[in-house]
Each structure stands twice: as C-alpha cells, then as structure tokens.
Image (cartoon, rainbow, N blue to C red; front, side, top):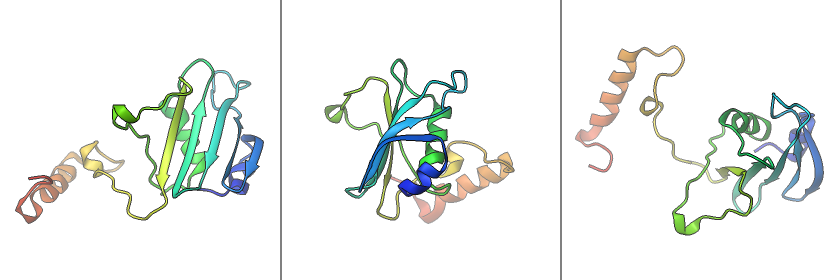
Length: 144
C-alpha cells in the first residue's frame, strides 16, 4: 500500500484525519457523472493488513470506481481483494460501503488469469495450452 504522503500527493484525497496507521476523508471526482460529489474513504495499514473502505451515501461504488480506488491507494503490482466471508462473519455497518484488502505477508494466492479469460495480446490457443499444461502438471488437478 502507498504511504499516506503518496496517497495525499495524488491531489484526489481530501483528508479529514490522518494517524499512525492511516486516515479518513473523501475522494474527489470518483463519480465521473457527478464530479462535485465525494465518496467517503477510510484507509489503514495496521494489524498485518492494508485496507481501504469506500462508500457513497445512496449506492455502492461501481467496479470502475473500486479500480480507481485501487490505483489511488495501492501500487500497480500489488494483489488486493474484496472478500466475501462466511455469512456468519458478515458485518454491515454502512449499507453502501465496499472494502479492498491486502495481506501484508508475502504470497497472497491468486487464481491463474486463464481461468478468467484472455489477457491483452494472448491468443485462445496459447491460453488453452497454458491451461492444459497447468491442469495436467503432476498428473493431478488441484484438489484431485
């Protein structure tokens, strides 16, 4: 996760408060249709986790908005997630709030990109070959 100084240097974050492990405020211009409306943001990097929460007062942030938040708060090659925990662990204090998390320990797992689709410049044939190779390596599929 970027430092608070790096986050504020973007010029997009209006800080209400900052502390030893993060801050809070608003993100300017996140809703391109309503550039004068600001999303509420809270960020922290304590307890082994980097975290950003974003909310509007009347709707959840869109996928594109969450991608923009990721760019504002995290470095391009950092892996971040939006968790769907077990229902018994649900917390919903703000109905229109979404969160991005990054574990600070190295080795956060990710599924292979071919399970989602083609990356820019990849051919269908190359992705099929990659998938076949990974699925048959060692003679077993994951979990098999």
